[in-house]
Image (cartoon, rainbow, N blue to C red; front, side, top):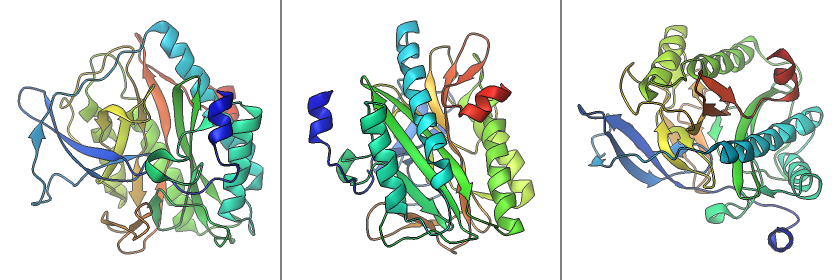
Amino acid sequence: MRDLLKSMSRRPGALPSGQAAQASTNQTGATQTSANQAGAGAKAGPPADDPANAFHPRILQATIKTAAEQEQMRLAGRLAADVLDMITPYVVPGVTTEELNVRCHDYIVEVQQAIPAPLNYRGFSKSICTSINHVVCHGIPSPDKRLKPGDIINLDVTVIKDGWHGDTSRMFTVGKVSQAAQRLVDLTREAMWLGIHEIRPGAHLGDIGAAIQTFAEPRHLSIVREYCGHGIGRAFHEDPQVLHYGQRGQGMELQPGMIFTVEPMLNVGKRHVRLLPDGWTVITKDHSLSAQWEHTVLVTDAGYEVLTLGAAEREQS
């Protein structure tokens, strides 16, 4: 661990772009995927209705974590949540996203004795993602990007502790925000929880997406389809891909011991997104506001356990 920490740069830089996949289900229940270049954090792939998308069948192999491995994931998840709790009072007008990045980096490395997973992951040079207003995901912290009143920002944190990953993100409002911005932030969080409430043995991945879709779209919020949740454990991104739209009863059947993220990205405008030339930052094509919340969730015998609850959420549970 110490050798790894020594190899980390003290002042982090930008975030990783992984191979992400969009999943669809065939009649036998096997899952088909198509991978493309995408940002780190949420996995990504072209939407199913993209005519350029050629699907290649592949059976997803979700890993089932043992009781001991689940304990390791609980620790990693708690540490990731603690980072977001720590940084909360610093998300204020005038702060730069690089300042937030450095505070998180130093806390993870020096206090938690852990590793910020995004740093140097497939070339990403920062320790967290900072996505402001119309940035959907994978925003790169910068000393030139200063928060101002009325902004909304997503901070996405993944911590590696003893080889295990904990992944979570949270929305923050900066000063007084518009009614539309606050509504988006609140409804996106509610959509995430509605998806999480579907998780139990015997349910299907499509149940999660359907719960989110049937909540969001009637409220005139669009769902980003190019990016999705993912399995997680010793690897940053594992199977299965967790879509935030879909049909009940379709997709992989959930089993106790599976661990994955639920992380819907909802837009006030249209769902379409664009990847900026930096290779990481994803924005809404129409520059409408976007929001995202994320938790890492364990499928238990009785239902689910959220591994990345913050201190306030733990008090309420």
